[in-house]
Length: 321
Ligand code: SAM
Image 1 (tube, protein in one colour):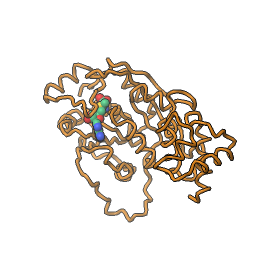
Image 2 (image 1 turned 60 degrees about the vertical axis):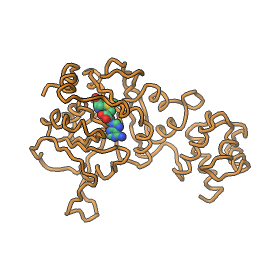
Image 3 (image 1 turned 30 degrees about the horizontal axis):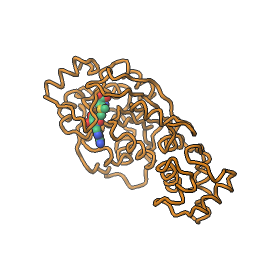
C-alpha cells in the first residue's frame, strides 16, 4: 500500500474510518517522510532485530519498522485504531499489534514470546492480537535454550506518559540494545542535562545511569497531524550492558535521587533527612557527605551521577541495606 507518511494518504484513512483524534492519548501522527527515515536510520535496526513499538497510531512508523526488522510488535491502547491497523499493515507478515496499555504490558513476556529466532516466515498478513496473557510455548520447559533476537524499542511516544514509560523500561531492565523515541524537545534536553544545569534532575540521572543518550534530530510541529503546540526531538539511548557507575541497591539509589529533586532548593541534608521515602537522619546524611569529601550545604542539583552513586552506597552501608 502507499506509504502513510504522505499527509493526504493519512487524511484519507482518517476520513475513511471517521477516526477522531484523542488528545488524552497524545495522538499526533507523523506525516513527514524525512523524519521517519531519520528515525529508522537512528535506530540502527537490522533484519535480525525484534522491534517493540509503543503506540503505532495508524501504522505510519510501523510500516518503516516492518521493512527494516525481522519482527515488530506494536502496542496500541486505542481500540478505534485496530481496524485501521488491520488495513494499513495487511501487507506485512512480520507485525503483531497488541491492543493494550503499554504501562500494563509485561514487555519481558513479549520479548520471550516474539523474540525467538524462527526459521522462515509464516506467510500470513499482520496478526492483530488483544490477548491479555500471551500463550506459553508448550515445548517450553522453563529452561530457555532458544536464542533471542536483539531488541530495539522505537516509538513516537504519547507525550503525556513519556517519563513513566521510560522509567518502566529502565527499572524492569528490559533487555533492549537501544531505545529510539520521539519526545517533547524539553524532555530530550532533560535526558541529556549535566549536573548543575537547570534541566538536570531525576530523569537525567535515570537515563544516564542506564544509557548513553544522544539527540538525533529536532522535529517541528508541522511534521505531525494534528500539530502539537511544542517542538519535539528524536533521541536515541544506547543501553549500557554494565552501568557506568556501581550502585549496590538500585531502589535506594532511585529513592535518594527522587528525594533530592522533589525538594530541589533544599540542601541534601534537609531533603534526604526529611524524606518519607527514606529513613535517614540529617546527621547520617551529613556524615555520609563528609566521608565523601562533600560540604554539608551541598544541593542535589550539583551532584554528578558518580557522586549520587557513592552517596547511595555509603548510606546503604551505614544502615546495613
Ligand atoms: N506512531 C504513530 C505515528 O508516529 O504516527 C502514532 C504516535 S502518537 C504520538 C502516540 C500513540 O500512542 C497513539 O496512537 C496513542 O493512541 C498511543 N498511546 C497512547 N497512550 C498509550 C498507552 N498507554 N499504551 C499504548 N499506546 C498508547
